[in-house]
Image (cartoon, rainbow, N blue to C red; front, side):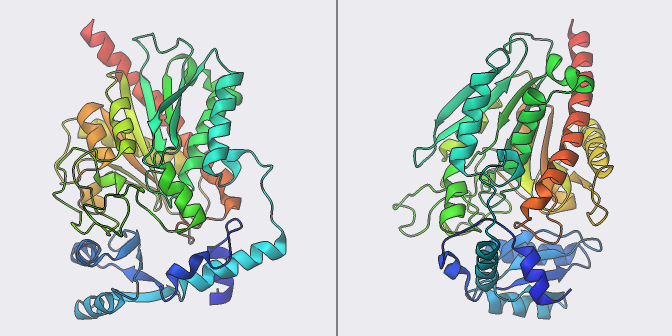
Length: 428
C-alpha cells in the first residue's frame, strides 16, 4: 500500500491539539529485519547505550523489529545497522507529520466517540475513574472499589476487587491483572475494562464459574500520570512522571517495568535518567509500582497478568534467562492462553509466541513479570496485537482485541482454578 494510505491507517486515533507532536519532527520509524539472535542483541545494545526507542522487539527469522531513531541517535543507528549487515527499511518517514495528518483527518471526519462505553475506545483517566466508581456503586454485592493511593502527581490509582464472597473464601484463587504501566500502550486499558464488563455487567451463563469460583483484582491504569501525559503532551511517552531534580533537572519519570525489586538495575537498563529503560534510583522508587507490589502480597493470588502492547507475545520469567521451578506448568498455561486467543484472531494477525521473555525477546531486570513470579505461581507479560499500526491501533480494532483476549483470560483462569484446587487438596 502507498505511503499516503499507510499513514492514514497507521495513525487513526482521537482528536488532539494542533502542534502537540512537534517534538517528533525529524523522527522516522524503521522496520529491522532480524536474521539471528546476534542481530537482536545488536538492537538491544542500541536501546540501552544510545536510547534507541524500540517500538517492537522482533523475533529473528519470524518477526521484524520496529524502531524510532531520533535526530540525536539516527546516525549511530544507521552506522551500526550497516556495519553489521542488518537490513532495515523506512516504515514512516516523519512521525510528527503523520500524527498531524491524522489529527486533520479526524477533524474533517468529525469523529466523536465520547458516548461510547469506555472499553470500546481509548478513554481518558477521568472516564476510567468514573467507570470504576459507577460499577462499584451499581454492584456493591460483588464489587469493591479500592484506592491504592496517589500517583506521583496526585491522581488516585484505583482498582476493583470482584468477588461473590467478599474475598473471604480461602478455596478461591485470585486472578490479578493490570494495564498501562507503559503510558503509550493505550490499547491495554480497554482490555482491563472489558474484563470488568464481562465479569460484572455481562456475565454469561457459561462463564458463571469465573465469578463463583475465582476472585478478581483488576487495575486498569497503573501509570495514570504518564497515561494522561501521553494524551496531552507526548503521544509516545512511556515512563512515569516522577521528578527528581537531584537526579536530573530536565528528565522525568522512570520505566515502571524496570522498577521492581528483582535483579534490579542489572540487565536491559540504562543509567541515563532520560532513557526509556531507566530503572529509577532504587527499587520501588515509584508509588505506582509500590501499589502493584502490595497487591501481589496476597498469597491467594495464583496468576498475575501484566498487559502490554504490542507484538502478540505471552512471556514469563525470568528476564535473566533463568527459569522458574514450575516452568513446564507456566508454559502449559501460557500456550493454552495463546491458543485460545488465536482461535479468534484476525487473519492478518500473527499467532501468539509463548516462552521465556529473555529467550524469546531480550534480557531485562526489575520487571513486573519477574517480581510477580517471585511471589505468585503464574506470572505473565501479555503483549497485545499491534497489527501494522504499532501503538496507534485504530479504535475500530478495540472490540476485536477485547473479545479475543478475553477468550485467553477465560482459558487461563480455568486452568489456574484447577492448579489451585490441586494445591489445596494436597495441603489438606
